[in-house]
Image (cartoon, rainbow, N blue to C red):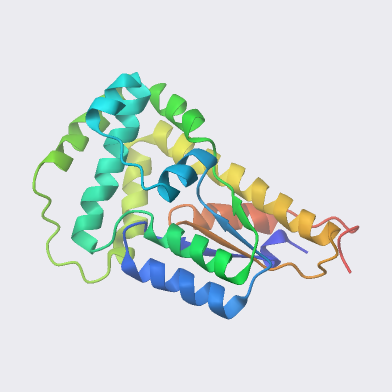
Length: 226
């Protein structure tokens, strides 16, 4: 029996209102034993306290701070276009878990580790990323967007082709970390006596297929099977 039997992943686009609605409705209908979200402790606290880092603050942290600032601005700009602040679907998952008294788990890699990996990217990828990130300070014209989710997989394929190193550290390695954390959650619930654990995991759409593949290939130990 694979771990995918016990975990339902919601693949979201972090700036899509439809994702927020899907998260709320799924948690309401599934009534899971646990909710897991694509955040680490640092980002969770920043989101909970509505902390916004200024460019001046980012520069004080050097290269890692600047990278984090640029990535945040990219999502913020997209959020203006799609009508939702980045992370609203994560906030919805947190709120729903608290409302129903469901344990909440943070399953992503420590942001400081991720930023260190980004800073170690090949010069070509860093230069290309820097040039493309300049567009966040210019008016963003995406045309008429009927469903931003529809083009997201194409965007991920393009990103993988243009940034193979960054794709590996931002997507593939984090897929492995989040999948392992979900496996630990399922194991913990079964040890506690929950025969058929139900875990809802809210992750970015680009992570969903990879995490599902890992969970599907891993088999639950016979000790846990009833």
